[in-house]
Length: 96
Image 1: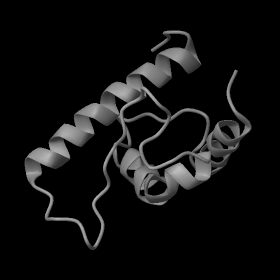
Image 2 (image 1 turned 45 degrees about the vertical axis):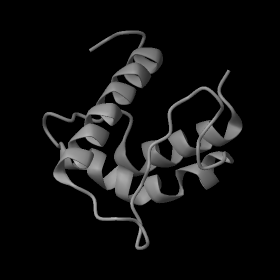
Image 3 (image 1 turned 90 degrees about the vertical axis):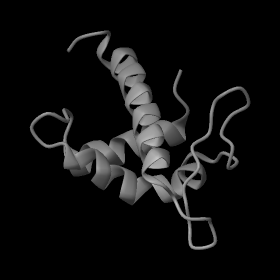
Image 4 (image 1 turned 120 degrees about the horizontal axis):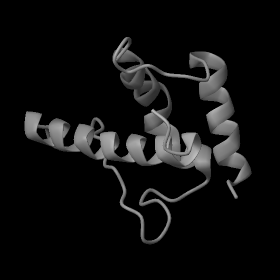
């Protein structure tokens, strides 16, 4: 069962971006969502900065962070892609 905070976050994203996000047609939507919700995701979900125990965290660079390289960005995008695919399978039951 999904925690209330996760359901609330999903509801907010759904209200703003719709029930279906077609990343082939509008790939920039994912970046918009990450920009809007990413920096505060842990507070929105009521979790610590590392996420739940046993799950990987995603580091987000801030003003005091060292510079981010292209390789860092590509690695994070690929990790996010994998997470989106897992979530899509869970939400959509494997439909594409």
